[in-house]
Amino acid sequence: MVWAWPWTLERASPFLSAPPSSGRMELFGVSHIAMLVLVLILCVSAVWGARRFRDTALEKRATRAVGWVLLALSLFWTGRGLLPAHWDIAQSLPLHLSDVLQIVTALALIARPGWAIAIVYYWALTLNLQSLLTPDLSYTTQPVVEFTMYWTLHIVVFLAPVVFTFGLGYRLTWTGYVVVLAVTVAWAGVAGLVNSVTGANYGYLGHPPAGGSLLDLLGPWPIYILWEGVVVATGWALMTWPWTRLNRQRVTAGGAPENNSTLRRRPSVLRAP
Image 1 (cartoon, helix red, strand yellow):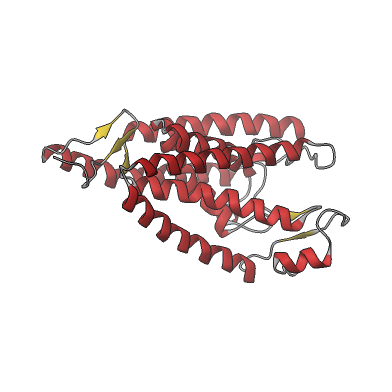
Image 2 (tube, rainbow, N blue to C red):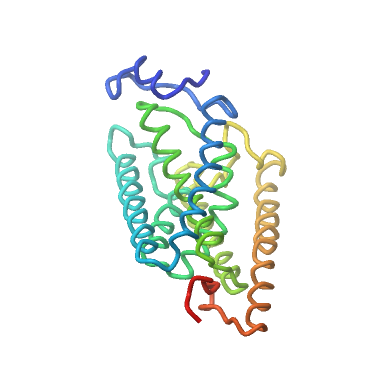
């Protein structure tokens, strides 16, 4: 199936009365490229806005508002999948990494616990990034809605750590790195157990996405899972090291940042001395 723009699909098969559609989003097709360009534009705009309004009343109001909207959309989309008309044991349970990440991101935006921001940083900028670069988007009954929700949820989740890190000055620590590794292993254990019972493929722990992904380069199952673990652990370590060096340099210079065990925040240049 060649992907058409959402409004074309809507004209061709009216919003909710069309029979189930069998098809997938074309990888690096016109609409995919358009979404990737939109992500880049939003990243630049969001970082600019975060820096512009950091440490103002608007900063927390804005992130909280986005967090509540994300939480509502995530719960709505999960609940929709549990309805009889949309139920699919292989997709409906909120066990894909992106499902968990959406809830954690909403919590990070609303309350900003350090562990949640750390999870969002590592998961969204690596594993969730694969959902943007190689989307596994199959259409069922409502292509327009499915397209919109997929990209809205994944883009917001991706923007959150970009804003936290490059806009609001949050920095990761080695403690946060270890915590997120442990959480990731726990999530994979739960998803793998459910997969073994149901025959589903949550977390792509049973086989890579049908549309192709970087997992295809890591060998057959279960070898690719082992290599994925090595790549992820190494990549996350490399994503942690620069921030820990910056943290040490600022502390040595007498500019100790706000911090907890999993996260630090660089003091704003806008604050009075």
